[in-house]
Image (cartoon, rainbow, N blue to C red; front, side, top):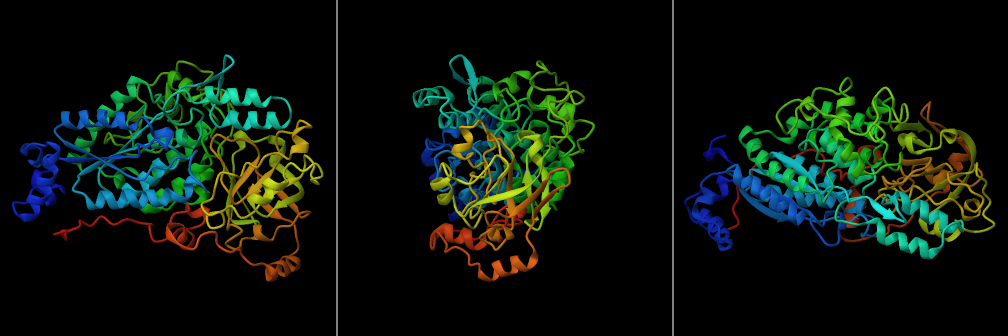
Length: 570
């Protein structure tokens, strides 16, 4: 691309009042004249924040990106966007994913940049940034913050999230003291970076690599590993080349790329949250992706032996060879798709070697067979629900039993540990009001705690059904993303304690076994809960959010707008 045609020249190349303003104010940072000579201007979109511990190393990584941009003859400019601290935000970071996407989209559109490097990591930052960048469709590439070092407690590795749930249940069962629980807290998060389990953050980093939106090895290099800084440097160099090649997200995020992500998600035992994020991203780039497409991963075996579906952690995954090895094992199933290297995905795994087969298994000797996500449908979820068999108890995946219903998260918290709660290990727990509109924001509360009375009896898994999500670090026979949600009038709203429900993962069935006349009577009496928010962004969200099966994006944000802004501010 010639210098005169660069987008940034509409800001910095004009020899008039407007060009004077754009250049002059930038020069107060010490940039010399030749920085504005028509070279590619590269935005570094940074979600660094001290309130997002996962992303706390991104300020340093930005410096690595800048080195690479300067080396390749570009002009790097770093800018902040909203940062979503998964472990810190209430009511849920997912409420704000679409706000981050808006922030990213409008920042990229409004500023005079030719390409963008997306620095993210924590669960919602990666999809939010990708959604925003895809809607403007400038050359874009991802550098993830990388996983934390392995957690340590009493000489053993412990995993963020996964062991929190295990330890919490052990305290409730009287098998672990509160003091030991508190001691484990200090050893779990030992460095900057995202959860070192295969939670949503590491899942999305893995899928970004599988879709070709990052350089190889991006997913698993620990946050504090010097090789991640080198990767940032190489990414800065590569984005300048991508601008010259005019290689955009729309060239990379094809249907084939999304299918590769679905296959990879099955192989790594990835988070159920990948479903809503991939659906939302597909909506931005105009790719027809539905829940049914996720069934292509249902027969893919689990290859990565990482928590919560296995026993190792992301640091071990890195040392075993990381995503290039997984992609190499999947090579007979992957679709040909272009990547940020401007080559097919095969270039991302060329020469890959596995250094620990207990961490990354061969395709024909997997951790578990047929471990991909399953889509369930029926009258209880006509638009679909999902379950993660690799993290579930096999015998519970084919069940018919009575339900015990919690009408809200407050109802659950107030009653789950009642000694007289009328439940057995066979009971199906149902939680309402936790979907996109109902909570709002679709929080990670779908992996409901096991009732206290049953925990003390040794029960560690039950079927749980809700319109919520669950953490990618969580496990259990948990049926999620029931659509339509209760607050939107889905049949979930009408379920009562004592109703029988049938679940069949093998047949993809989720049925409420109540006759139609009774359901019609209940529907006539049903009223949605009053909204929790009546102003601001949260009201905008509730009024416009799509259901889970459509990615929970805002209805007016689907698609993209690649037009150049021509009106000046002065």
